[in-house]
Image 1 (tube, rainbow, N blue to C red):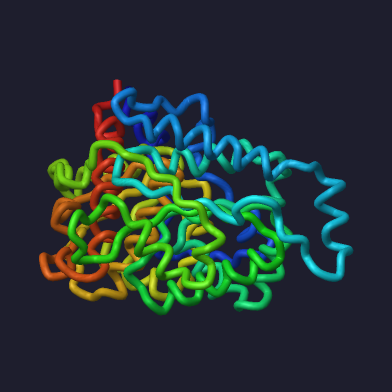
Image 2 (tube, rainbow, N blue to C red):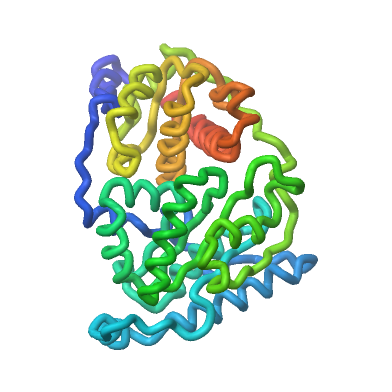
Amino acid sequence: MSRDAAAAAISVPASLSTRNPHVAVERLLAELVPPPRFDAVRFDTYVPDSAQPSQAAAVRTLEGFATGLGGGEEQGRRRWFRAKPERPAGPAGVYLDGGYGVGKTHLLASLWHATDAPAERKAFGTFVELTNLVGALGFRPAVEALSRHRLVCIDEFELDDPGDTVLVSTLLARLSDAGVRLAATSNTLPGKLGEGRFAAADFLREIQGLSARFTAVRIDGEDYRHRGLPEAPEPYTDAQVTEVAGRTPGASLDDFPRLAEHLATVHPSRYGALCDGLQAVFLRGVGQVSDQATALRLVVLADRLYDREVPVMASGVPFDRLFPEEMLAGGYRKKYFRAISRLTALARDAARLARPQG
């Protein structure tokens, strides 16, 4: 490639640190769908382990639950003209109870896809996305908006945040009273024996008055939690990150400290919009985070990038050293482990971007 052609191929990367998106309520609700990684999953793409009968049994139970959500749009419209919502037959909710790596999110997304309702009548989001939605809209508007849905799926219901747990439990009670069906997975409380495996008792206790309305669906399988964190790839140099960002279409390039500061000015419900149009993220000078508020914001950003399958190329410390040991031993450690795992996967995806251009 000639020098002129090489110069023409270099673009000016975007900067996340200069973005401050404003997101309409309609978009926040419209984005409550399974992320791109789970666009194509269905019950028949889940491959049960023949050594774990509960996996095949879970698929059958969820297929039946999805069938019970049918009835067509006409029936759904008629319901809203009744003076009092009609309590649906059968369980109001299902809780998928199992360890890491057994396919709970796959099955939850499959339930969403299998439910006979238009996308605007069913919602899929993580616990964090749901709390962010309530924070952005307010409690009563969130209840009113979600009460129009036939199904609400909550992935990774977080039992380690008492305040948010009470908030979402109350929200789910209101939705259940409105006749909305519910489905959830959860993490486990910190410090539990067998942590990362079966949390049904914790979940049902935390949702208090809703527990009688949920059916726990147990999914046995190998617990990948005990494999430990994946080893992060070696970071690149600042010069490498800058050079590759300049020749990557749809790239953003930021200095990590500045980005971390900027995230504090953007509501986490808008982190998805912050990533609009990005094909790759480049970070210079990643350093260990000592402030918990900053760390939790980075967790949300990592989730949104992972959902969108956006590779991340960085200099500085490797992602498995992003959070200090005291954070990894604290009450939010599940969030930090998830963020490290996801950022590591995205860093591996970025390796293809660093290959020399022919």
